[in-house]
Amino acid sequence: MNNSSERGWVSQLLLNGEVKASDISRAFGELRVLQDATLSVPAGTSLAITGVSGSGKSTLLHLLAGIEVPDSGWVRYGTQGEEIEVSALPEKHRTQLRQHHLGFVFQRGLLLPELTAQENVALPCLLSGLTKQAALTSAIERLSVVGLGGYWDRRPGQLSGGEAQRVAIARAIATQPKIVFADEPTAALDPDTGFTVMQELLSATTRQGRTLLVVTHDRAVAAQCDRMVEVRDGRVWENGASR
Image 1: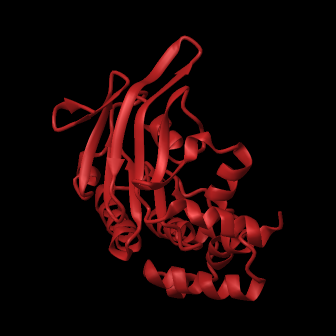
Image 2: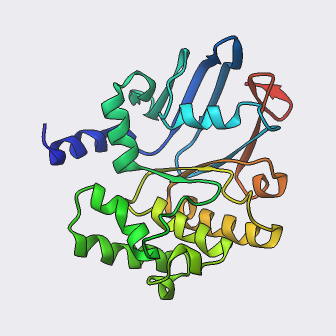
């Protein structure tokens, strides 16, 4: 199967960007991190996943993104009758899915220091098969979306923490993903900068019809999302009830 047909196959998986998980459990040796966790995230909405350190919220995010697979239960994308069970896909297809159709923002951006902002954002486009010129042009457009159109030639060391995270957001939406996952995207920032970055993240995702799932320990960040759940005792809680 060539790259073009693989991308075409993967493109059918996301449908409208809805994310669902049912009774997912995950253990690492004797440590059970998640037990029968269930949730549903409608397309085009934002969900904050909260919890104390070590509660399993990042593990939950990794399962929802197909980085890991649950020991039991399932994760699906799409609407009823037109959905794909991501957790049942072989690793090769889950990798294609992440590479071409999902976006990721991490705590410290994880930008490549030797590349400019434009080159960092262009990288996923190149990996998706765009020509170098098309990828660089697209990168300028994505940087403009997060208010950094004039910063294209700066390297990460020349950016503030907030600016670097905005470049990371531009990179996350570079391939026009239907779903974006963010793991503590504001944890390394001061509260004011964190608020601004979170607003930029929402502007680049749900306000453009994308689905956003955010792991955060910061209730002020979580409050900016449409909904908030808490991972506690291995389960997902919302409004005081276990899901």
